[in-house]
Image 1 (cartoon, rainbow, N blue to C red):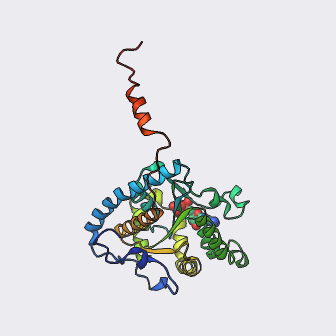
Image 2 (cartoon, rainbow, N blue to C red; image 1 turned 90 degrees about the vertical axis):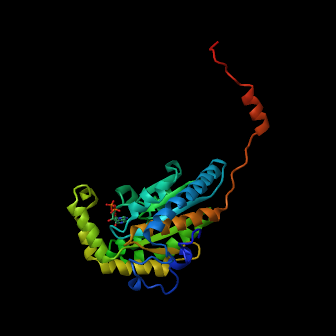
Image 3 (tube, protein in one colour; image 1 turned 45 degrees about the vertical axis):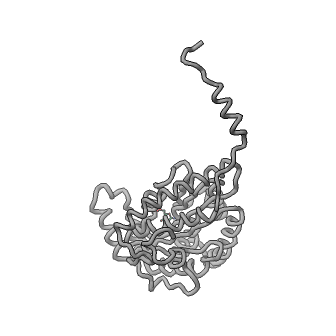
Amino acid sequence: MSHSGWKADPQDVLRAGPGFDLSAFDRASTPGWSGGKDAAEEHLSEQGERMSELQERLFAHGRADGTRSVLLVLQGMDTAGKGGIVRHVLGMVDPQGVAVRSFGVPTPEERAHHYLWRIRNALPRPGYIGVFDRSHYEDVLVVRVDDLVPRGQWEPRYDEINAFEAEVATSGTVIVKAMLMVSADEQAARLRERLERPDKNWKYSPNDVDVREKWWAYQEAYQAVLDRTSTDVAPWYVIPADRKWYAWLAVSELLTTALESLDLSWPPADFDVATELARLAASDPGAARP
Ligand code: ADP
């Protein structure tokens, strides 16, 4: 928490603890932030500089054979703004240190493996910020809502996911799970805009309305995710997403906190600086080619 606009730590107010009730969650609210939109935008750009420096340290750490990384998991209904987070929050740091991976309908090859296979393969290497646009949680969301496998198969996945994430965390990855929650009305407005604006048509799929028809089944499935997979090692943060500026601000704050928690310093030189300075000084190639 690095700004007076936050009157409470977003880590505390957004975390889904025991008894969290998604149906009572106000998706247009701005928990913990008292500064309004203009102040949020200003704070976001300051935050960008802070995040950039921390990300560069992480990258340097990776180059120096470090083991740490950060993984941002983004889940949410269509139009909740997952892409906007990638563009507006991750877009503030050096793209070479960010690895974004989106998960769609599994390919035949992916389907031939355990559902966590493609996830393991996409985990961030040391030094990187990995971003999952959708994730292994689809395997207890769309899969559960659409009965893609029998209950007996998806039911054990919650515990399996917790064990998997614990293992990932133990290997040095800080996991930040952000569930972007848009209201049904705001989703309708965003889908309408995608239909009405030719420059947004490409974001629309007729399937979006089919999924919207299953809104309540999805809310129930998301609630189950929160009830069963918001663990100490990888808690869920539920982000109200009707105001995009708030969602960007909140995720940038969570990500910054995660990067800070790594507590990385710049890796020391693995050469003798004085010797190298002397070599550099003596290395003048001169103006003329021999
Ligand atoms: P987006 O809608 O995020 O822009 P896509 O159009 O590629 O991206 O949609 C991804 C689709 O893939 C979603 O409908 C999602 O539910 C589906 N999907 C993702 N993971 C799985 C999975 N494990 N099993 C079935 N469907 C999945």
